[in-house]
Amino acid sequence: MNLAVIGHIDHGKSTTVGRMMFETGAVPAHIIEGYRKEAESKGKATFEFAWVMDNLKEERERGITIDIAHKRFDTPKFYFTVVDCPGHRDFVKNMITGASQADAAILVVAAPDGPMEQTKEHVFLARTLGITQIIIAINKMDAVKYDEKRFNEVKKDLSDLIKMVGYKPEETPFIPISSLAGVNIKVNSPETPWYKGLPLISALDTFKEPAKPTYKPMRLPIQDVYSISGIGTVPVGRVETGIVKKGMKVSFMPANKAGEIKSIEMHHEEIPEAVPGDNVGFNVRGIGKGDIRRGDVMGPAEAPPTVADEFTAQIVVLQHPSALTVGYTPVFHCHTTQTACTFLELKKKLDPRTGQTKEENPTFLKSGDAAIVVIKPTKPMVIENVKELPQLGRFAVRDMGSTIAAGMCIAVQPKQML
Ligand SMILES: Nc1nc2c(ncn2[C@@H]2O[C@H](COP(=O)(O)OP(=O)(O)OP(=O)(O)O)[C@@H](O)[C@H]2O)c(=O)[nH]1
Ligand SMILES: [Mg+2]
Image 1: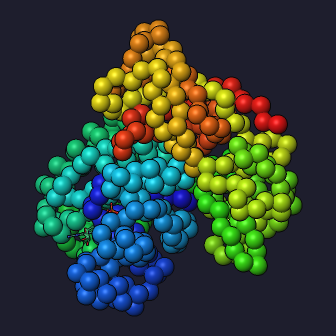
Image 2 (image 1 turned 180 degrees about the horizontal axis):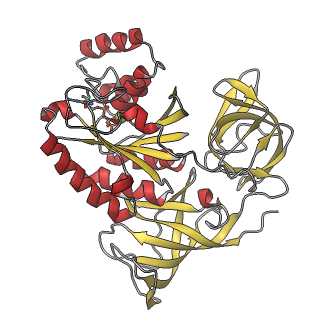
Image 3 (image 1 turned 180 degrees about the vertical axis):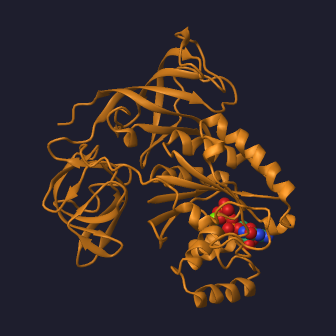
């Protein structure tokens, strides 16, 4: 199960992940103790659990997460690949990459603050990027003296927020925790006698296993490409649909490069095939490091990923400082690609609640509007019809450091790739 941990800056996402890794035995106590001493000596006391996830020098100095990091831990039912997302508004693009790989999410909200700007933005993005299952951890309960009243206030605000984007509050676990103190993580703690639900780690086991679309054409968006001595070029990414097998002939789009799968590795073990949800590294005969990059998508040679000349999309505008018009060219984040795309045509404005047409050919769109639009990428990009390959058809639209809109591709006019 791929799990994203999302939420506003400083609300304790990395600390929560570090704490879960510790409590499940994925990180031994002496490592945490080492981090605790080092963090304290560097004026970063209390960051010992966050440092399990924040490995970059700049992350540790600034005390924030910048890029997403993957870690693994096991619960009785699942093994989780957890993606710790940055909360800082400048790094929402990294959060989108993390969220686009996830089956489920933990939303971390600090009890003293309640929902903040990136709480809202992350919830909206998680939903539009297709994450259907969510658990809400109301963290830093120690800082509000484990007050039930404060917990209920924050819970109420969050219920309203998640309901707006389509999650069901009554089916969503809300858990009062303190990641720093280790309260309600593995077992229910005496600090919150009023809390009758499950502790965080047990709640994770109530997630439903995502259906694996193995029968669809294989798609694997490239997240990174490494060069490893003795092995060669090693692209990494998550299988979204279909099966990747050793010996398979594959094609990368829009790079338009072909090769053959030599070996596949997951969590440092060689495996014969990879299925949807697997985060893998693999070696391809015929592919050099410079041939492909983040944003390219691998598919079978006989059914390569679709490169769009233009595509039709249904979008919801989250926020735009003025009006969104034809000619506007923000960055589209779709699977692992970030590509500038132009709004070519505003076909119709929809009622966001019913989906009925409100206006044909509107001259502009503003915050809160839903619409059908035609989009043209400024350079080749892979996007698929959401009906056939939902994982490759959802996107977020960003400009000047904020999320403008999110949506899905409902028709593609393919580009001829020779
Ligand atoms: N009092 C208290 N502080 C906490 C708790 N959890 C985290 N913190 C503190 O909050 C600060 C930020 O924690 P992080 O885990 O780095 O927060 P984050 O959400 O990962 O932050 P970004 O990745 O930068 O968005 C640190 O000083 C933590 O020690 C908690 O349960 N109680
Ligand atoms: Mg963090």
